[in-house]
Length: 313
Image (cartoon, rainbow, N blue to C red; front, top):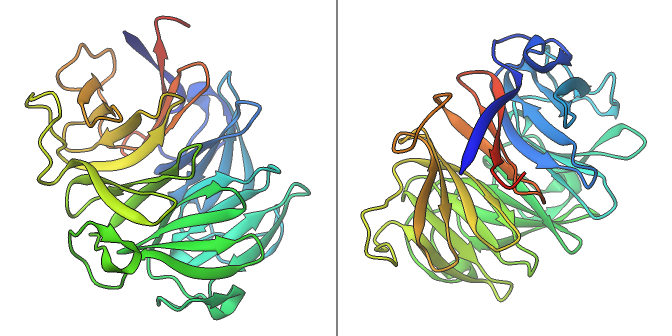
């Protein structure tokens, strides 16, 4: 059983502060630091925000005006940032959707462009010679950033070398190996501890996966029947996170719900239209799961960050 609490925000704006005194504008991607601090891409404010465990919100970098200027965090700009991810050293990476660039916020609070020319495309290459089509989501594993880039997954080294890991510039629904596989629009990506990638395929209403051997498969949704024979389905999945048991946690906008998918593909609604609701979610997008089992959710319609707290906490 879970109870839900408002962690921060609840009205649109751009204000730092504690709990419901803070303001966001369409908060999107989420990432937890090793210290348990939540980092949020505030899409409407073109900023990266920080939320402590008690709900204290502060602005890390960027601001409402927007742009793609590199430099100290206080003057750097972002354009509709969609997602964030940490590397092993604690550097923060930002999928800067509006500028078509992968940005890096270093430990000394300096923003730089790791890869991306700023022009839409699908060119592999180094640094600014490479291009992205729709940089929506990112994750980190073993020295590489993996990016959900429209119909493909790109792999970026921490030195800025970009290559296409799976998929192509063509949409579709086809499992297989690397470039032979086809995806619809990819909205979210996360890596497990073994480097397997799990993705939300919006167009195909599916959770897809890619092994480290670059084999692509479908875990749930699309034409895959629930493993338990139930009627549990995905309606409009958008965000994804993984817990320590390799369950996938999904934000399902169609049901305004949070769903958990086991490694066997069994789908369970944890919070939403079919469960008792203390707070009704409107448009849940980003999701992250803490080591203690707490589940963090960004709702872009409520301009809020919520926390699902398990009864064990």
